[in-house]
Amino acid sequence: MEFIQQNLLLVAVAVVSGTLLLGLSFRRPGGARSLTPAQATLLINRENAQLLDVREPNEYVAGHPSDSRNIPVGSLVERADELAQFKDTPVILICQSGARSSSACAKLAKLGFTRLHSLEGGITAWAEAGLPLKKGSRR
Image (cartoon, rainbow, N blue to C red; front, top):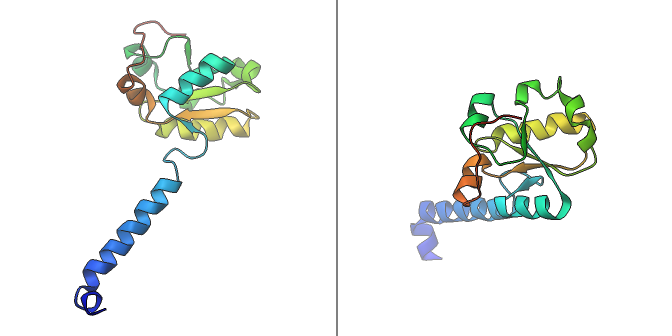
């Protein structure tokens, strides 16, 4: 008890950092709909998930997963009819880091899409996982 009284600031820092660490371990950074690259690969292979790259065209051309479609976040609402066939199938949204794809998930959910996922860490995590990227063409 004497140690705690003499080192109150140190104990307070330890309690606060422990609480934050515990909170982060229970909450995933991308939310409930986020997938790691390994989980995304499983979903693609098992359920034929559609990959939707929501980056800008110049980012997409620089490197993207093969068989992914490119519809920038700003155009999602206007071009949602292109994705109507995927309303009830898994759709994995990809951006550079995971931030834009999370907001794109919210937009598409409002349009009635039911099985949306965001790639945690985006294309950066995809490349770091050693998964292939195709350069050049757009779809």
